[in-house]
Structures are given as C-alpha cells and as structure tokens.
Length: 218
Image (cartoon, rainbow, N blue to C red; front, side, top):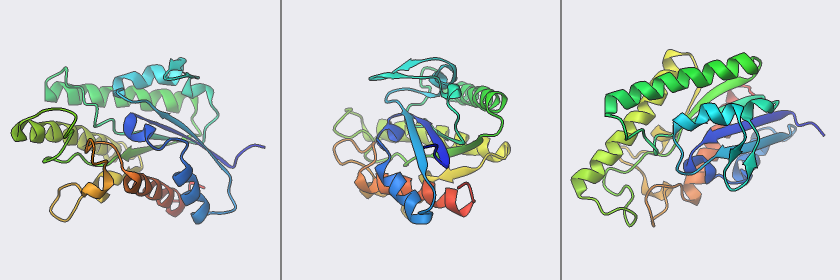
C-alpha cells in the first residue's frame, strides 16, 4: 500500500546510525498515529557533501546498491550537515565556499526534478572540543579542539545556508549542547565520542518527529 509520507534522509555516518529508523518511526507514530510513513536512509559513512549530487542522480554502492534519490517519489528530503566529514582537503574558507556551492547545486537539482517535495536541513550532534575522536585518533588537546572547531564551522555554515535560503532547519546541534556550550556526552558513544549513542539516536529521532508534526508536514 502507498504510504502517506515518504522521507529520504541524506547524510554521513551520523545519519547512518539511525539504521532502519525504528526510533524515528515510533516517534512519528506517537505524534500522529493515523499516518503511515516510509523512511529511506541514505546515510553513508565516511562521505562528505560533495558526494551528494551524484547520490541524487546515480546508483550508489554502499554495502549494497542504492538507486538514485531523484528516481524516488519522495515527499520530504532531510539533508544532514555532513559536518563530521568536513572538506579538510581545502583551507577552511575555501572549504566552506565549496560547501555552499554544493548545497546550491543539491537544492537546485531537487527543486528541478521533484518540485513538490519539501527540503529540510538537519544539523546533527555537536563535536566535543575536549573528547572528539578520543580512543580513535591520537591528538593533542589543541589539535582535538581544532578538529571540533572545524566541524562546528561546517555545521554552522549549513545552518546559515538554510536561514539565508528560507529552508526549514531541524537543529539537533544546539539541542545536544549543555548550558556551557559543550557537548552533552550522554549523546555520543564513549568508545569514539563521535557517533550518536542510544540517547543520541533518541534525541535526533524525536527532534525530527516533533518538528515535522509541529510544522504540519504530515
């Protein structure tokens, strides 16, 4: 049977960690039990934003073959910030410009091929300036903070693009911070301090479901 709403989530491993989106489905059902929803997770680990234009138009192999997103009759597309995979091959300002240019391309392609679909941006859980990638990469405290700052810059640029282009934004990033502006470590795995923990998955899922319900997307 056709679903009332088809959602495509596009991102990196922060989105991939939502898996089959069981928590998100449960939250959506909690807010609106009468609607049926299909969620397609196009979160691919260790990928950055530059891979998304191809993901829209071509088959992508990530553990299996994923068909082009623009071949799907979706109602909503959630574009995650990819901030945890910054364009570090470029100096920061150039990388942020590349991010902005690529977002322009992505939004234009979606609007052209699926004009009725709604585009929503999502920020994910913040990086910790004190613990980011701990146990995964051996970094000095200064370098660890610099890595976190670079990722925050990309996440905030994603937010700025949404605001300047009147694109709705689900801001998980801000919700994951303590009152002192540092990450609440309950939201990330303690073996890498990057990826969402079960509590982090609940946070992301509930913020998405609540936003979609409150803004009458379903």
